Length: 223
Ligand code: CA
Image (cartoon, rainbow, N blue to C red; front, side, top):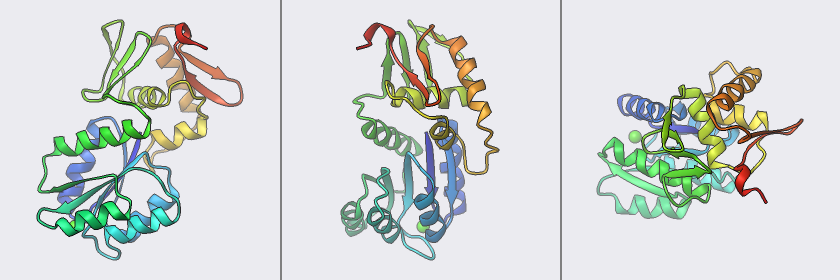
């Protein structure tokens, strides 16, 4: 899952990026409204954390522009504590949720998880596919109850496949949703990660659709 953080306070921006990165997301960052708007307009984010008070273009205007341009990614707004009118304006502009400053990082993480699972149509923070269980809260993966060890890139890949299980996902889509903007994106590495992941998961769960991409399926529950 790839996220965008738009926050002009350098310390807060850094804290958000580091907490979200630690939680297993690829994170891009912007420090003003114009840059944030541009990134959200041109890159396919799974969710955005957007501050309201931003230089160059305020967060509400950024959000309104995105929605006008049919950018539908979930957006979590960061609002000032006592500005109820900001919260109302934000929700009306198309925000999916908000957190009032100052906040606990755990709350931002929980709200981001909720937005991601809602947009994937999932009800809980644990995602299952047959014996594979991925806990988005702890970033832990088990197979038949036994923990398996994944690198951060393997985890990102599996988390994306689990959120979109049953659907064929192209290599391009995986590259766009697993790596930060500055990452050296060599699409061959996806195949390498798929290969490594296959070795750690039960057989036949990651399918290759020749020329189309990959899908995660539970062979037991196949229609
Ligand atoms: Ca601000």
